[in-house]
Image (cartoon, rainbow, N blue to C red; front, top):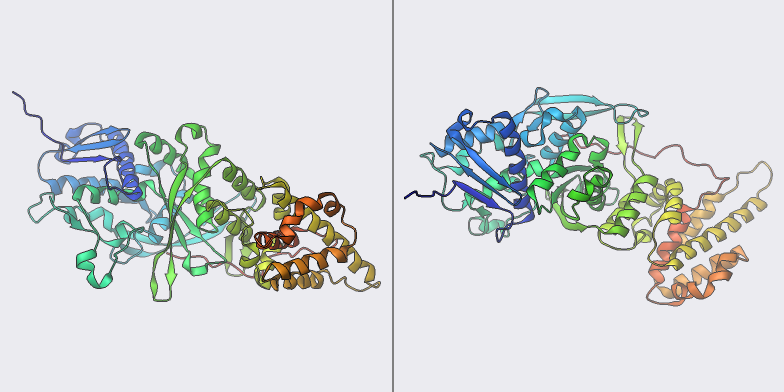
Length: 512
């Protein structure tokens, strides 16, 4: 009578109690084992004759001999270092990736999983010149080369002194799960993070399946420097195919403006690929890491949010990408990828399933931020024309404000004497500050009626007055109307005005 032995390790994405990070880790292990199967097709060529079974929702591993020897071999094969000193994840098929993408993986891991000195040993600094676009100047990126990192030598943490796999839960370091946190630091021994060895193994491979973005936020500044995308994995085989679509994701795609921008960029990227309909991911978790005043030496988790997508969000976000795109800018301290401030606001709103212009008067209310928003007025104007609005009256309201601005600016030109400079910027600033003083429904109603009356006859307003009346008179909608008014002011492109030639200051590049 034969006896069936249980595999050494079994992992299933449907196991109770596991998180999105665990599922991502199982997917990362699945991807890695599939690649190792090609490099070491026969179990006899592997330590302990380790073998595995890969199913769409589960993984089983078995081996002979000492546990430590087998796991140490597995980790050293899975987590390597390239000739350029870059972290090289076998599950991503690094030999098929271009230099730009390999740099993004390295910098992404350095900014999230292995940022702490205990998890990463540096071999000095390195620079690489990257050609982002054919028509753009090169940018130079700097990074710390890897001498070693924690994943390579993690077998000793999973095994006891005799080389046997631990059977009880073990404590894990925070770098293994950036989305988690100790509840009470003063009582970390009682409330620290503990996992079974099998689930620790899953977390170890999460970096393979996750995606990374380098952030440059105008609203959150240093509190948002990196975004770690944790996918919602429901099928290991399908997700493996999808993740490898990012084989040449490129440095420019590695850059994002905000949490929402990173999450939506990840969720919508594969829709341009051949396998999109079969591998579509509709939800992910975004973990934001940045520096805070009480912990300036390393990046900590400053935000975490689940981002979902539907057809309307997808369409509007794609329009924002097309009309408010990033670009390579020549700066005083080197070339860099300049992110869109307008898209930062829009993407965060879409990610939270709010109107794409929601809160714009608060977020861009200062003179400096409004000027940055108005710098992208051409793209915002195209957004006004192309997006799917919540209701028609919102777009009509903006068009009415555009018509009013055209007539008010024409009045300014009529009053300008020959040889003088038309004070359009001064008039625009006067309107902006007037909007900023609107703190309730009554003060906004006074502002908007005065604004429209100064313009004289507004055909859009006359044709649609009954539709616009709720935005003007209702106490529920005055903030929405104020946002629309500021959007109209920023997106109006006066053909006679001088467009600024460049942004006022460089964006700071994060160095790892």
